Image 1 (tube, rainbow, N blue to C red):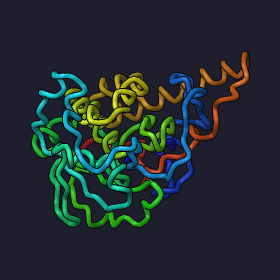
Image 2 (image 1 turned 90 degrees about the vertical axis):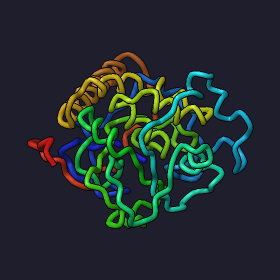
Image 3 (image 1 turned 120 degrees about the vertical axis):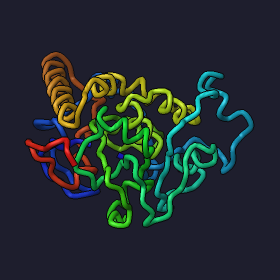
Image 4 (image 1 turned 180 degrees about the vertical axis):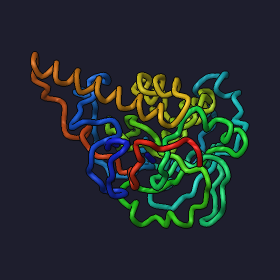
Length: 282
C-alpha cells in the first residue's frame, strides 16, 4: 500500500486529507498524461488486481514476461501480513503467494527486514538496502478503505518505512497518487533501494505491471539517487515544485479538462509527522 502531504505535515491515518510530502498546495501530475488516465469505478482497495483472472496460476503465467525475468531469483525474504480485505482472485498479494514470490506472516510475528507500513515515520531510501539484504522486505496487505481496522500495533518490526510520492497503475486506483497496492509497494521499495531486477520480477506476474515503471520512472530514478531518507524527502519536494510549476504554466495556455481531483488527495500513509530535523539514526 502506499499520497500527497508535506513530509513535515501531519494527517490522520487512512482518510487524512492534508498536504503531500513536498506539496505547497494542489498539484496536477502533467508528466504522465493524466488526461488520458482511465479511472474505473471499482471497489476502493489497495490490493485489487482486477484483471479477471481465476484463483489459480495459469501455465506459463510467469514466463510471459520473457526468459530473463523468468530466471531472476529474489534472494531476500519477501513477506506480507494479509488482513483478507479483498477478493483473493483480485488481490495482488495473494497472486504473489500463488506464484511463490511472497510468504504470508502471522499477525504478531516479527519481521527484521524493512516493512512498508502507514505507521512508519521514515521514508525508504538507498540506506535501507543493507537491511533488505539481511532481513528482506515486507508489506501490510489491506484495503485502503479499511486502514482503521488494521491492528498495526501487532505488526512488529524495528525497520518500518513509508514510500514517497508515486502514482498507482493497478486497475482499481490507476492514475491516483499514493494508492499503491501490495505488489506496487514492494516493487517501489525494491526500485528505490537499488534492487531493480527484484521489482521487475514481482511486477512481471501482472498484465499491467510494466506500466508501473513507465508511469513512475521520473520519480523512481530521482529517488534512486538519494542516499538517505532526508534526501528522498528533498527530492520529493523538488518534484512537487516542478509539477506545480508545470501545472501553473499549462493553466496559462490551455484548459486542463481531463485533470480531475484524484491527484490532489492527501497521503493516507502519513500517520505521524516527520520533523524537518529528522535524523537517519533509529
